[in-house]
Amino acid sequence: MIAHLRNSFSMIAWFLICVMVIHLESRGDDQARTAKVELQSSIAAAKALSVAFRDASARMLPSVVTIRTRMPRRNTDGDILDVLQGDEHDTFETVGSGVIISADGLIITNNHVVARAREVQVELSNGIQLPTTDIRTDQSSDLAILRAVTKKKLTAAEIADSDDLMVGEWVLAIGSPFALQSTVSAGIISGKGRGLGQMVKGQFLQTDAAVNPGNSGGPLVNLEGKVVGINTAISSQNGTFNGVGFAIPINRAFWITNELVQHGKVRRARIGLALNTIPQEILDDLDTISVNGGYVTGVVKGSPADKAGVKDGDIVLELDGVRVENHRGLPDIVEQSPIGKPLKLIVLRDDKQLELTVELVSAEDADVKRK
Image (cartoon, rainbow, N blue to C red; front, side):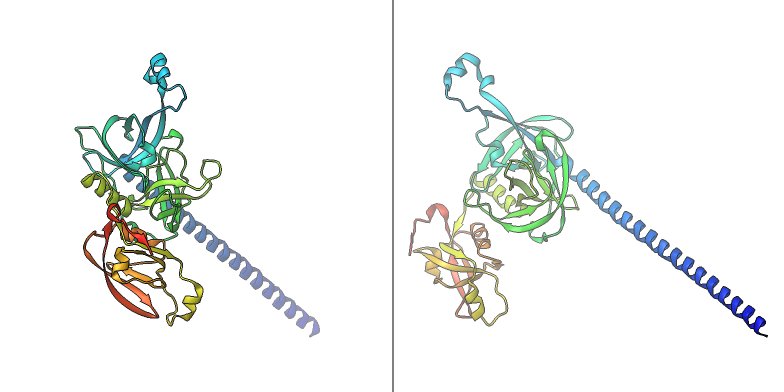
């Protein structure tokens, strides 16, 4: 009897061991299958992103040009070298990029790419070289336009709405870094509303897509193959890319372009305010949880803001229906707003919103004194 029980227990134990082995093998197979599915899903996602990069590049590359300029060489001998060596020895070649925005050859680039140039030539993505004419520049924004001389229609780039961009979105920087034509690099929008100091006006998009010398004036492109910005500058200690590049938002670039096309210069409006970030002690005293806007630290005497009734300590919330996100945002909104037209200005004063009316003036006419 005992022997029989021992045999039964042995059989049961053996059966349980077999079940456990089968379960573990099955579990291992399930894990392997899950890992395989996850790997395949990751590869599929990577391939989809690769296809998006490829398609966006293909749509944009025909509209990107390499810009070659001949600049005066700086020397102390001046006209003596011109006489002895001729004009060819008095110039050198620099390379930048540009983007075609109309079929008749209108091109956007940076001011620093073509400023002071004695001759400017563009090279299309297919290698065709074209002369240019009608160069118009705006040093304040570092933007310029020019026209390629051709009887054939060129491929104009599609334009996106840069106001819709979000931090974290994929973008491509396309241009001719180090004279390497039709180079594409990928990255994301790593910041918005960046300032580059007093030398260049406006707010910039920040990207970690590689931007190097020669990329200047080329397009920053979304995954739909549409232009969202014009690559302009890098933050670098050695002159090459260190992970931070800056681009002019295409909405702003188009406003500047239209001004240059229609008026030959950029007409900018002025309001006459000095702004800063909202002090924390002010925010703590407000009933609302959070407030976006610009804190008024000074009003220029006789300026549109002064005449509208703006006071020190006001928080500017909105101008002409456009929200002011921070103190750096208002100057862009102001300079692109209509001149001499009554505009609604919303300010926060003593925790109450006030609606004022302001008429902006041209910067050229803004001969006013600070209070």
